[in-house]
Amino acid sequence: MKPRKIQVVFCADPARRRILTAALAVRLGFARTRSDARKIIVPVVDEGVLATDPYFVLADFLDFRHSTELVARLYQLAVAGIAVVVGTSYLPEKYRFLCEVWYESDLQNS
Image (cartoon, rainbow, N blue to C red; front, side, top):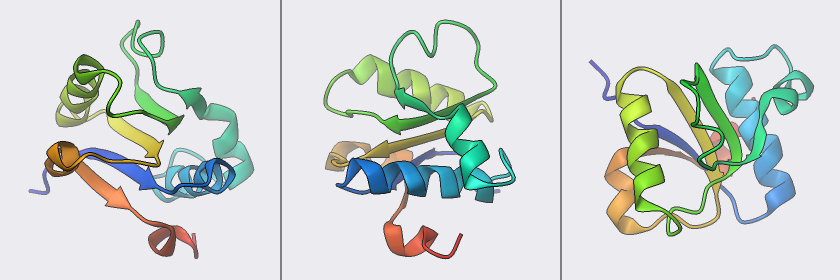
């Protein structure tokens, strides 16, 4: 069985990261086209996104250094089978084991 992890789109450019996050959402089956996927992607993960019990989390940006509790909550959701897809420009080494990292080269042809 494949371990359930936070899906992280790693890209420094915010505009490109949004496109790649949409491509991953299509690959995972949340949308048929990238333009449809962009409609369900939120700009930033915060406590408001997690206030209710989400069916999935799709976000352009997560600052892993900002809130340890938020990262822990996202990992709990991923382990429970909820799709968690976030974009970032920096991923601290201590969180790499929680994540499956997607680089631009992985998602270019999606």
